[in-house]
Structure formats: structure tokens, C-alpha cells
Image (spheres, rainbow, N blue to C red):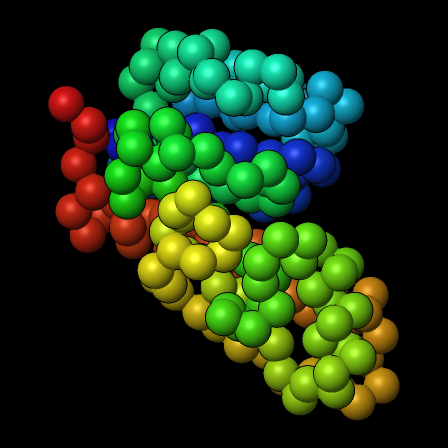
Amino acid sequence: MSTRIAIFVSGGGSNARVMIDRFQAHPEDGVEVVLLVSNKATAGALTVAAERGLPSLVVKRSEWASGTELLGALEHYAVDLIVLAGFLWLIPGYLVAAFPDRIVNIHPALLPQYGGKGMYGRHVHQAVKAAGESETGITVHYVNENYDEGDIIYQAAVRLDPDDSPEKIAERVLRLEHANYWRVVRRLVQSGLRPRQ
């Protein structure tokens, strides 16, 4: 029996695309993407989902506070694990309580450095560049009610050249994300994450 996951996105969804394509092509991994959730009706990831026959849900800010529609959809699709892939809203307490240790996120830096509110995407890479770091990387972590403070599951680093621009740093980090995020999710599932009862 596959573990059923929902992917939450806010933008183009390249990590979502990689993960959906991987798990659709490899059912032996034991992971099935069953829903894509976005907080933006214009998110490119919604097109990715539609092209792959994957149901999607757009959540409005007004509905986010109560979560009635969202929790109903997650229940309807029997979601076991939530995977955040560039989802920018803070996860509320009701969702953390409904999915304890079953929400994971990927952050484009080596936490605890360069995390917290407002630290996402180019903001992270600009900060890494401004600090003159010789390396950066990715962190996959569990999600709690605070930005980027959940327990770390996995980290991978990449060396930086002194002349790397923030855009070049972003490219290096994105390659790490695409190569590793789906593997971490698969490992979590195969190491004993069981479908919710």
C-alpha cells in the first residue's frame, strides 16, 4: 500500500514536477502523489498538476485560518504526508496537529543559518552571497508552527566560488533540491512512515 502525499506549492513547482514524475514512473517506491495544493491561482505548478492528471486545490487566505476546506480535501484524498515545495505561508497549528511529524519542507540553505520569516528564494541566496559564504546547501526538515524551526531530517552542501552571483547560487542549490528531495521523501516513507489510520 502506497503512502499518499499532498504537495503544497506557491510558484512554478519545479520540485513538485520532479517529485510527481518520479513517483508516477516508479510505483515501486511506495509513494503516490494524490493532490497538489497552492495558495496562488496563478501558480505554474497547477499547470504541471493538470498535465499529469493530478487533482489540485487553490486555498484562499480567508479559508486558511479555519482550514475546513483544506482538511476536508486532505481527508477526501486520504493524505498521509504533506510535502512543502516552495510553499510560502506559515503552516497553522490545526494542520500541524492533524499531521504531527507528517509535514516536511525543503529550505534552500543550511539551517539554522538563513532561515526564518522572509528568508526564501532569492532572499536567501542574496544573504549567502552578501556574507561571503564558501558553501551553502539544502535542508529538509519537519514543519512546526514556526518558520524553519522543525527538526532537521537531511542536509546537503555545495561549494561556492567567490564570483558566484546570487543567481548562480540559486542554480547550484536547485540542482541539489531536484537530486535529493524526492529521495528524502522516499526514504522517510520506506523507513517506516505508515499510512494514517
